[in-house]
Length: 323
Ligand SMILES: Nc1ncnc2c1ncn2[C@@H]1O[C@H](COP(=O)(O)OP(=O)(O)OP(=O)(O)O)[C@@H](O)[C@H]1O
Ligand SMILES: [Mg+2]
Image 1: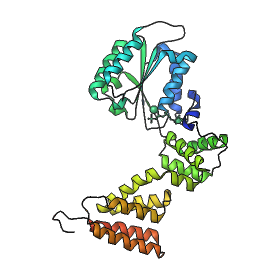
Image 2: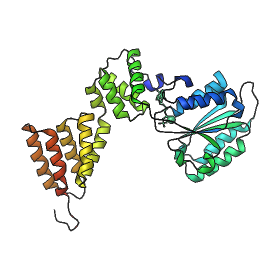
Image 3: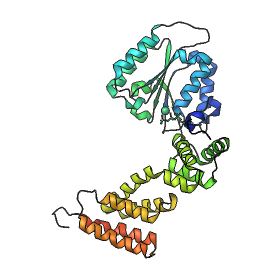
Image 4: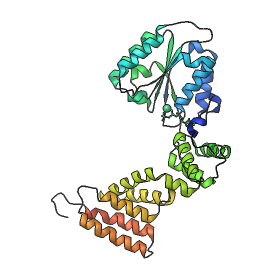
């Protein structure tokens, strides 16, 4: 099994028809492909890893065939060099309005459009007007609401959906078979839970788990440690702030869904809580030591950790400075 190739790239759809879960969008785009010269500017909005960039590239290929690269400009709107660079590049690119057989217009794919300030977007709107005779824009963003209204109203809006569980698991299974990676279906389900419908994240997790040896729930749990750290930080914060209900929900999720071992939760929560400014650290140490001991003695982990959440606010330093 080759680990040099990124699976997200290797398994990126090459045609619109290969996209998962974006049926409505594919249908509408196929409609536009029948009469490309009538195609409006497009705005692709939706959560990460659902196929927005892939769709833009598939569309370019299907519009222009093999020479699509010559007539497509891919830009990142979050380019730190700013809108002036973007404007210059678009101007140069659209300057030669050559009519090439089979090329309906030049295409500008502007990714991460929501990274642009509204004044940059206002500039972009003017660029779109200046160059629209022989070019079309595809603007990509996570939220359409972060694109200014005058641009939105010039675009046909396409809303991408999160990838559904059954389709994601099927896709992951297909990749495993193709890569000769050992896997179990429960681990694929866990990857889905962790991904929140983001297929890029899911495929990356899959590859990381396979690289460790096999796609087992144990390996998936251990490689997803980064997101766990973030959630445990959140857990400490909620508990110290006295929000028992929310912290308890999160604890349950960490233990039941992600299967984080209780001693890990205790250890990481301790490390996190000790970095909080307004806590009595001595008191905190005593509380954690007590629960640590109870767990070692074999007390019920979920009951003990729930009690810990309930007790933590008492380690917070009150406004008047008392402990
Ligand atoms: N709908 C989909 N069908 C098949 N594969 C997909 C789909 N969405 C994402 N993927 C996989 O995830 C990878 C990333 O997809 P893509 O770059 O198109 O996501 P995106 O929506 O542009 O995300 P971001 O908002 O983070 O840029 C692709 O290379 C592909 O492997
Ligand atoms: Mg993208």
